[in-house]
Image 1 (tube, protein in one colour):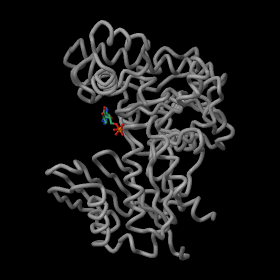
Image 2 (spheres, rainbow, N blue to C red; image 1 turned 180 degrees about the vertical axis):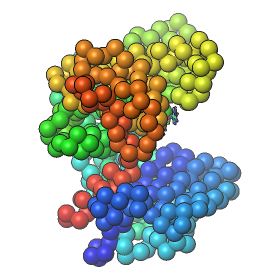
Image 3 (cartoon, helix red, strand yellow; image 1 turned 180 degrees about the horizontal axis):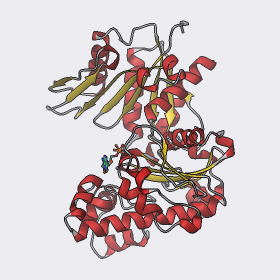
Image 4 (cartoon, protein in one colour; image 1 turned 30 degrees about the vertical axis):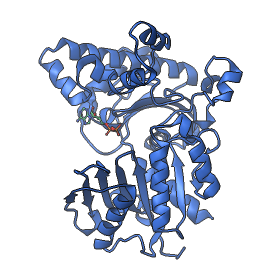
Length: 411
Ligand code: ADP
């Protein structure tokens, strides 16, 4: 690696999409996270006739370039991304590129930290496909394609599960037969770990403390949603489990549910395992409850007096409150609650309702602070509150780039 190799390309490969960002880690180290982002983009509907590539060369002026038309596979998608980057002088062959950081959803128990990908690592990520059938295959394709484009460059896997590997067995194990659980690797892994790691650290910074000094409950509320309890910078519990289905009410996922509901649906409604999987993952949560999974639309309908939307909102908030209470008990002492991701960062009514009535737990939200819109981390609790309530925008790409760069410059 050359001395001026300070850039990291972050790739987030889904089954039919690739999201990417090119970051300059010297600028990021100087605290200029906006200036660090040289280019961002997205390829979607890969494999369809209507594929779309949207590329924004932030460093070169910013106007988004859009191309539509068939992109056959991930290989063609990444080649198209490489061409877009090259058009701005940011091509993958640039000596300034230090590494490619890949978001990998499932790292099982083995990967507790970002890892330089070699054949053995790739094999292990493949071995985890049965526990992450929707995600790991797409991540693997992304890695193989990037390796083919730049075989000489370090490729790093940053795992969604890694931050949660510090959970004690008491939080990570389901209370089922141990032999069956171990034979099939059934346990609680947790997801969104990159976001929980980043946000809990930023929350400590906001309080002017080191991560080791604070206990934080992070509420990552996007379309997918999860909570985590972080003691002194280490995760001790999180709401997602074997898969991202467990825990909070989400856009389209049910979150916590009596597992007997699934037997009931099979025996009484005659549904297959795949149909139940689809129901709970894609047709439940806010969408199943009221027909909408976008919190903006739900709030608009509530303002118009829509009762189904109001009930969906109440169920969503009830679950959040349960986790705030549970994680307060798990941590013993809470210094901060941090709201993040699409809903957490933008939906002031969700934040107000989730914390309402929790004064006995030391939690409160100041209405005027909560109403402020900003991209910066900020406190929204009144001075008297024992627990700091904060809005801390997440930045998973920056965190993946940071971890990738730290790994390749340390070696
Ligand atoms: P993903 O899980 O897809 O990464 P995001 O973190 O981007 O999701 O969150 C997307 C969700 O954020 C949307 O479905 C919507 O419910 C919510 N959201 C985005 N902007 C707003 C807003 N201004 N007010 C309320 N909710 C919002």
